[in-house]
Amino acid sequence: TRVGMSPRRALGGAVQRNRVRRRLRELVREQLRERHDTMGAGWDLLLIARPEASTASHAQLREALRSLVERSGIGG
Image (cartoon, rainbow, N blue to C red; front, side, top):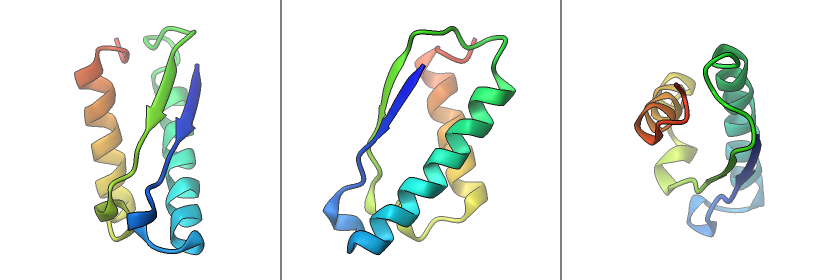
């Protein structure tokens, strides 16, 4: 499974965009470890971060990603 991230410029400067990218990358790793048995291989995912992502807590981002995986049907 490959995951690409595209934080918009609306998130702020490069520092804010890179911070959001790092936070999302860690959350994706968590999801892939948790759902290793149920999430099939071979997916290409693109996460486009909205401006709210720069101020969201870790728990809020985790819940948003979990919800996206479940709604998409790739999480088993």
